Length: 252
Image (cartoon, rainbow, N blue to C red; front, side, top):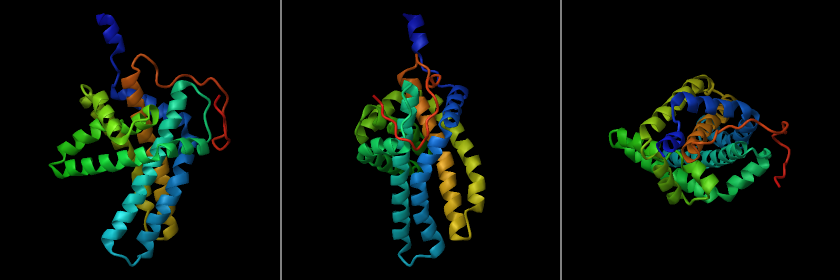
């Protein structure tokens, strides 16, 4: 019994999590970046217009509009990315970008609900001496994969994420911290060129988001599967030929 329990203990070491995250990122690179560009191209177009064209509107209104557009867009992208990783994890034939977004759109309300609730909670936590925000961000980190894989409602997804992380909070936090540091470093070049002309701001911010968001989303999926299926590898060997990221695939 003890040996069985030990074998089923989730491996959340940061090296293993980062290794699986990078392997997913590399295997799904074209599909993931394509997913990101479809939405972030539009989202960052709005932000670039607001930033560079000096739109005459109350500053607070502009902040709220751009924040809402970014939050909704990111939620949809993360849902599609989680669905893409689920296919890889199950050894299924990879779907087209259109089909991945259709499945994410079917969970649109829950994805946006999770993003809104967790964002407000984490921001409030950070205002309370930072540490509560870090704790909440760790506890709710798996909510998006829960929505896509288990079909949970926003509040149920947050509870489920908290249950999965319970007892593993420190290791989940360390893994996510490593992911965050890497994303921060990779974002620096895009931040440096995202100023001046409308075109420069738009391209730099859209490309930066499309390249970094998948890495973070894949890390959350890796943690989810390592916690829910510790006895099974997150990333099985591919068993089919490469498919175009744009071609529509039917899964029987």
